[in-house]
Length: 319
Image 1 (tube, rainbow, N blue to C red):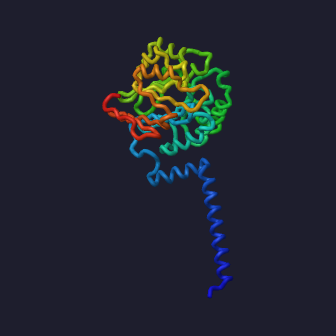
Image 2 (cartoon, helix red, strand yellow):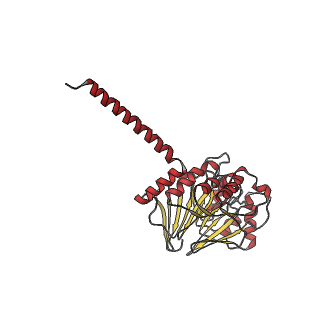
Image 3 (tube, rainbow, N blue to C red):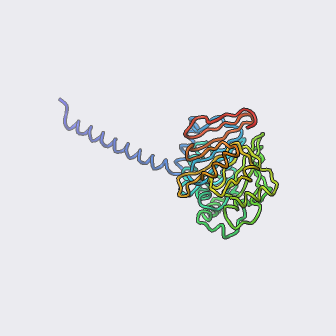
């Protein structure tokens, strides 16, 4: 016959182990959501081989789904740039995405303009990942008064991140890609039109990133005579009615257009903007319907993938 006291002792011992295990799991979960915890799991996944794509294309353009906001990861030949980082609440999403893609440091974080839906998550990125340079335009003081942009400046100061002010004509080193600032061309009253406009060229593939510019800044770019003809257009201002004028799209003539957008009272992208893009011959991709988008170019083939679909398209030769 079993000793009841002995069985009772075993039950108490088992209960103590179960409680300890529950406590350890809770502590592990709490640790995992911290920046140190995310870095730890990233290193563990890297050692085990689970860290996103293992074969990188020569050039990658990631449109990160952050709703009606902007966040883009650009990678070329081992160098990385983050162009905008969504709203403040997007910070975790952007940082986690970078970790998943195996990004351990950034050569550049670029703020297209000070609006909250573009710079809100940048402060968190600066705090959690090593960044070589924060790239900005010398916007007037009144445009830099948003709480989000002030937080970016403070984060750069606290982390010792170099702040680099650029002008049209300046270039950033991104592998062998020609990555050049081509706007803003004037001192605009509107923050949106004051967005950095950047053109990227690499092995026969070209892309244009325009922040939130609208018709006035678009027209100034067209009139300037700068080469706007590209394969890929990051659609400005989330596809608003005031963006992508016919004259602008005629000069750009994109084959691919990506729109970063989510639920919004302005019902973006607007139907008239989508029609203009379609009439220009662009294949349109959207984060609200396709999720995260990745455009990869290896000098011979363009591959498009999305979070919600497998391969969307593969193009041989020049896109």
